Image (cartoon, rainbow, N blue to C red; front, side):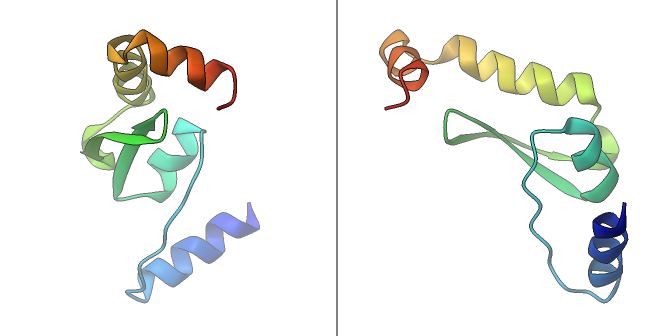
Length: 79
């Protein structure tokens, strides 16, 4: 994808690039470091070289399971 080439090119010049995506494979391809978020909160920071799609999904899912039920209800209602 053209945007991926652009991101890699800018990063190769030493410029920091922030990528936001819910696609784990895209993050693993483009990023050096990944911040896993769940319900608007950072739950883990992992090096992409040490991570897999399964790792990222497990971290995000575990955070969802640990969230207080009142937060889950508010989140599901869009508040």
